[in-house]
Length: 363
View (cartoon, rainbow, N blue to C red):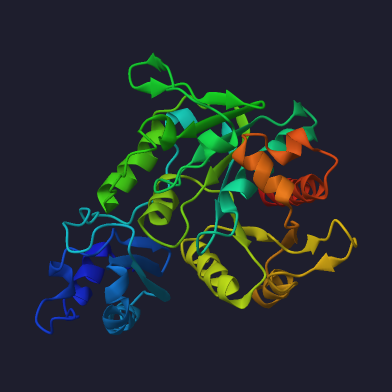
């Protein structure tokens, strides 16, 4: 018999918080409980300075869940994605299942672009991957592609696509996405003041992502690329619950520290049953303008080697180019404004590999 969220909560009530008194379930720090098959996943909200003390509790919670009959895997993570100590989102009754909102019924493939940590070029990769996919041709013609900016904490798509203004309302609460370079784009950045500090708690994150999935008129799309927030917390759990993801692309830089976080991202999506389409090594190398020699600023080949260890596809290497940064800052994505560049060629190759992977999985 499959394990239920209530059974998990009962077991978690036996785990004591860092104060040595309070049951973990009464701390207000738990996220929703995600159950996929026999795998159980949840997060504990902590402040960064508390992480070391809460690590003991995290391990105890993981062990407690793993001991439940019917559990084949348990993953408990620490996250600072919402204010610790505040009321948590309500625990669900039956195990949550991904569902198709009516406005997503015309989307053939939902692809998450994720990273285990910030600063690895995830959003730039998501933007250029979407545009490279839009340049591919299927039997029915050019691929129709959209981008959902689910990076609630740092929305980048308005700048990357040079889009401003608010989406218009088509009917009721339904919004029409903006369009940039032939892609449909929706971002929380179109709905809030980007210059104002926003404090997002877990339930607010879940609500915002759900609204952008449910209340946007995406229309028929071959691929909807979802730019995820960095990390493995509430936003990722919400998307896994709410949307039928066809797969995830993990972005990392070559050095060991980034790859450790990328490994966590791979494990998280695997735990909730989302296929891994592959790993991208961003900022892979730098070519000197003067001597033409390759320099491996952040080491090299780490992502390819990690892909082999994890048994997932390696999608390709993207060079570290000043032009990528300059064009991204100006809202001129390199795939469409400098298609002859090495970076643009790399993104096109990655897009071809992603599309091939989606086609194979679709049968």
